[in-house]
Length: 190
Ligand SMILES: [Zn+2]
Image (tube, rainbow, N blue to C red; front, side):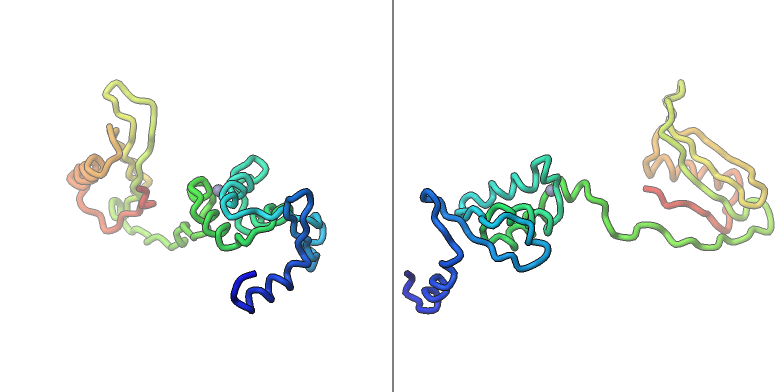
């Protein structure tokens, strides 16, 4: 027993929930909620040094399927007893596969806005980049397009790359041909 009376009392109170079977320690569960009622009555008590191994099996195995914090916790508690709520949430939140695969709940969609109505040609242009396409003889794989919102006139130039320098050069040449418009509409793609 530890020196602290408080600790000793806690251990004595909790000891009735533990049982030794063939020198292996098990924890006897109190089924106290609807969610845990169907789980087995005995849980294997896990020594600290095996917790990370159990976590890995529960989260990474095909049956674990990289489920969230609560589901991982439930599947571990079904068979094992260990104080690991905080460890599990840290583990799941820092899992590389989860971070790269799970869909973000951040809203990335732009709001729908009313476009200005042009009153003459070459006032409002809708610009975009089209590609990647099968390479032409000149090794061009992208198309820079600009559609005049008044007349639907389409302007298109082939581009070798869609990097910032190539695209800004295409826009510069475009303005040299048609003059500077009042509005450019673009989806602001990367
Ligand atoms: Zn994961």
